[in-house]
Length: 632
Image (spheres, rainbow, N blue to C red):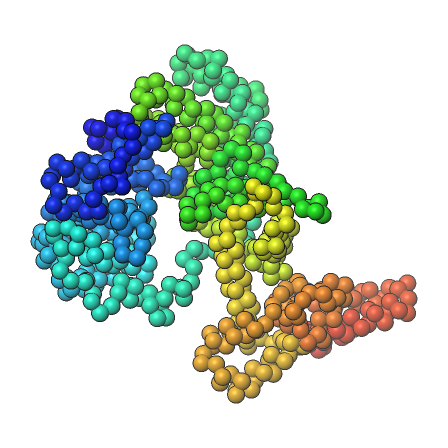
């Protein structure tokens, strides 16, 4: 940080600064402002061009402090000057056809470019003018041959990882044209970074499967159940915590050991026999449990939950008296800013619990702000602390000075993995997985095949018709990206069902039998260029909905076969019944046989049972069961 950081300015004239540093005297260049911040209405400089570390802005609140700066001491010394010149140009003007970069983009570009400059240093090159297309092609080969050494030890870089590196080299060529050390030609004149990374043609980004793994149902249900159990016991736990805090306040000034001993005695008196260390962990686990419940029931991204503040809940009511609960936060994914997410009552209770959980931490931030204002009213950390003082997911950050700040993305993942491990789960849990799981469950709800949190997820099947439940200030900022994610999951589910239909296993139901008959005619299959095209065509042209005992392809769900007369699906021209439905019909068949023996069902009842019994028998035979096993 520069020596002039603490000098308050009327307003830094960033707009008047040049777009690049060519032709500037060193003193004039080094005085250029990189970032500044408002502290209680007055501008304070964070970084100047001549600083060895540039402080960046434009990050989400869950970004760690060490991720918000660029350290030029990491850049090979021969390229340090041109690196600064390029990054200044990038920061002021962006690249051709795109806007100015935000903090995370700037940080990612710096890291990717650093790898290439170190590669050049290893080749004994000392200026960009010596970089040729052949050197760039060899760099591509080196990146593809590279094997990771940390988290994904022994694995090659992903296509997206390769693309980030190659895109940085393209940017270097463009940005270096605004410096005194220009890269003479495009790194790969006849192609592109995407092509070099294999992300064109069949490897195009939109054809790549999701990189986010889907949490298995058994893992998710167990994890959510454990989390919600802790949330339900949360108020009792916080009562104990608040009692311990009051005890510590009474014993202020005593040695640490004496206070700990008093807390342990108090916990024992309250019936907590595991000691203070285990209790403190339980309090931290409660925060993680709250995160799991909110992430699972809202579909929010990690940074959107990190941006949650006190008072985030609101409720609306439609003309029929149906109540909708909303959670408001800020999304940094796009420039849309404020978003509203629909949440169930369980999430509302969790929000209330988190507001109580975080209260002592918010008080600590308020005290920090007051102390800094007394010490130095122009301290940039005042503005930083103000960003976090009403946040819900806070934690103590240890460093040169102990502070309270929003949990970083890394910290969220650390606590989630620890929580999963304590549950006895081996799944490698991460915060970004909850959004896809939400989308998957919401898609299953729309698909009619959901048995878990059905009522809440069913709301999402209303799509954008929720407008009637919104008021003037809430519900107008829906997370439209989440709807796109749900639609993508829905398409994946339908593709999987269709692929199962076109397998070797037999199908029952009128549509299922017709599909198998159609599949046996070779000329029908020849109209498609491949299996994937056939799947896509059938999926897009067929309404597919699960009613629990069959797949229904009717355009609507008004048929009584979906509700009152379920055995009708066996002969319905819109029904497909697969092998995984077999246990349902086997159980129904056995129950109907027993019912037929009841003497008091009357003649009408007997005829109805015999009809349904024959329908179930036909389905079981069509699915491959031996007729001798179905003798009445």
